[in-house]
Amino acid sequence: MSKKVSMKDIATELGVSVALVSYVLNGKFTNRINVETAEKIRKLAKQHNYRPNQIAKSLKSSKTYTIGLIIADISNLFYSSIAHFIEEEANKQGYNVVFGSAYEDPERFASILDVFIAKQVDGLILAVPEGGEKYLERVKEVSLPFVVLDREFAELDRSMIVNIDNYGASKVVVEHFQQQGFTKTAAIALKTNLKHLQARKEGFMETSSQALGLREPLFYEVLEKDLEQEIERIILHAVQVEKVDSLYFFTNRIAMAGLAVLARFDIAVPEQVAVVCFDEADAYKIFKREITYVQQPLKEMSQMAVQKILNPEIRKLKKIFQTKLIVKESTNQIIDNEKL
Figure 1 (cartoon, rainbow, N blue to C red):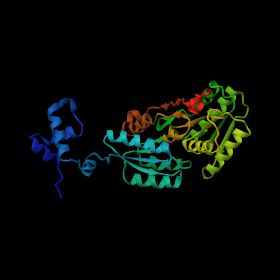
Figure 2 (cartoon, rainbow, N blue to C red):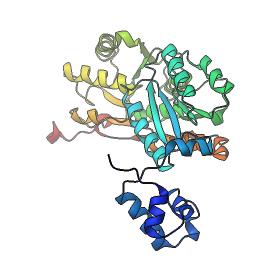
Figure 3 (cartoon, rainbow, N blue to C red):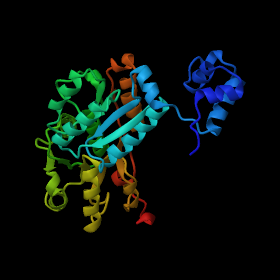
Figure 4 (cartoon, one colour):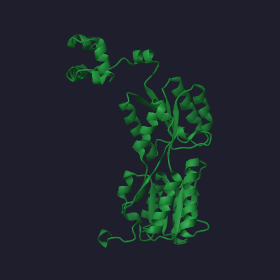
């Protein structure tokens, strides 16, 4: 087994001090170190496959240089994407990320939370499942920095939350349908009490009532366990009976199931019904029409979440991210017949 190279070995080989090697490899005092010398140190460290002694580093700084990330459900495309961006940003800051998926189970969330606290992570980024908010007291008890991602709870200060303007996102969707000439819109969502999805619902309901003159906008809710069958029933009823001309799928999970139904029953998009999906997904590309979708600033949200853990000043900031509607063929009343 080859000997593990230390900072001292690198310093000796180059004839410089160990302190100088430490400064370069830890990114300190960069404006006071000769550029050529710094480059030689980094090159030699890479050549010898140098790795810092994380245990010694942690003992010295009282940090583990790890961030715990608990996502609500790893099978959800939104969370797998945001986990990628969080890890990318954390690595840039010299931190590693340990992951856990609660699968929307509050007890599983609590169990993972206890493991991460025991491992002495330096902070936590949490997508808390419904009913899991009561376990946040455990984090507060140990004074561990944390932020809540994609979820909102009344007892938390806005500065501790990284999320989008869900009400505004739905408002833009409904207004877009109206501008495109669609007059009867329905939305399909998961049945939940989660505050951020309730805000998304309120944005749809209130804007539909005001903009389209509907006293009771068509809003359908499905349970996760019955999702596939229920969405098929709802879409067929909405299109064939209610004569809905536009559909708003509230999550990418709903969207994937809904698009499958439209394809299976040869319901023409947008000729029979226009479609807007929440979130972007590569799988949309296999659909006959390009899908209009609500784009969340996942990278920016991820960067903010990591920075709130690591920077006490940024931790105080209160920011709501805005979404962007990416308009494609699925909401265009005028379709090129050559594409049919």
